[in-house]
Image (tube, rainbow, N blue to C red; front, side, top):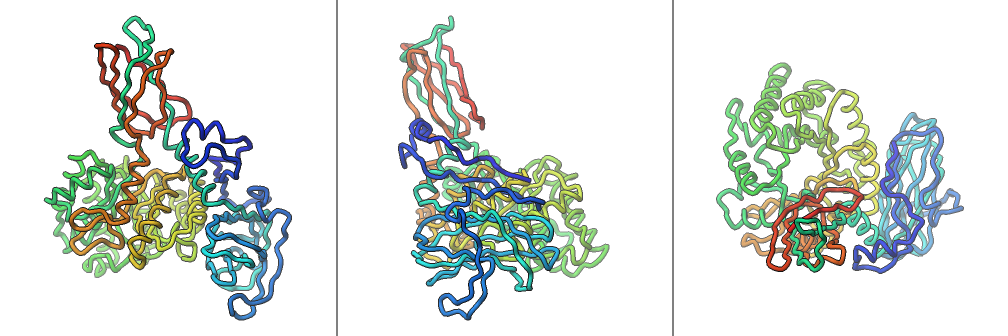
Length: 558
């Protein structure tokens, strides 16, 4: 399957940026990011992205040597790279085929004098056909000499053949311009309001006031029971977010800590807050494959007793909250853990999805996982491993699938993150970043910087449908990252969120109709109210702005 929502354009973006008022530049003739990705193994490879970029006409070489004091190693296939620039975003791709095994996880790495990047992209390559690797990196210090290698991740001896390699650099400004291009074409839309009198005569000089009252793009955070009865917390949350997820309160260990003693009181109270503030909510989670977070009494069950317990869990939860939650994370982190399949057989997960779908057919059922976009070094959750598991479920009859990417980052790698999203987008399923935070091993200022990188990357990717932060507030802090202190004074990460929320919302728009009786503007998708005044006449109205390539026209009569 191929994904190409935005190809390399041959025309100048001068007119485009002038119309939308991009704050970065008035014209742009640099490279446009190519979202093309492939996830099937092909008999013949496709041409190189960006015509090869800086690898154009380069052939892979065999390099024997050491870097940074390491032992002598033979690198094949490899590319010798000169003068990599600090802060530049490099997008790497290649087609890969192997001999000596039916399939193998091939990992691309970068080694320079001062630093090594363990993984900048992976692909599960196969014998007899070509597979597409897509990744990238940002160098943290300038490098006069680096080696980019592709190697078998488990060090077994196989032959690797590559073709159509590409390495395309983007300056930081070019990267931001490409992000803004998607935001302005996918998250916003042109609107023209036509004002006329009751006879249909156009009215020039009518005063227009437009205000966005809600956003189409779901952006939210986890909440915990600590929000109950805490009016300052509730007001702070509702002012910012239009989506929520319960941190722990729907998990099995929370709702049924002892067998048969099911209690949804806390979740019910949290859901009342959600409804009262017209917030959408994700359901997290039905099962967690990690035995550490499975109730002890469940771990003690086997065979038919365990099967009966899991059936009761799904039916109780899903019938209780039918049509209340837009999503359900069905079998959390199944690429890393397999508690239920170990005990109930390889079709246990498929069974979970089947019952969940029958119980709440309108909810989108998600596969939620960590270390998919955060890194490619985790062999359990590479992008191809995730895709393979999704396709297994699809072949088994699972419907209404969704892709949940947790997003627990330390130091993000934006080109790799984008490349992984590109490959996942080939599935044509909803993609959400479901638990975004930055590790508390970093300081608060660094958390804020890296959080902004992740949020901009998610919001500007055309296939991401929503973003959730994992920042539920507790008296002793948060899981990894807090947005505020206990007095709801912003921490640096909170300032970042507020800045982006403001940037990604249409501010108050004021103007007058022209000689055609019209007024035009670009607005973020969502709900709007509009006030029109002409002489002593005034009209208040509302309109919805949904996605579309054409200008949205709206008529108002005075």
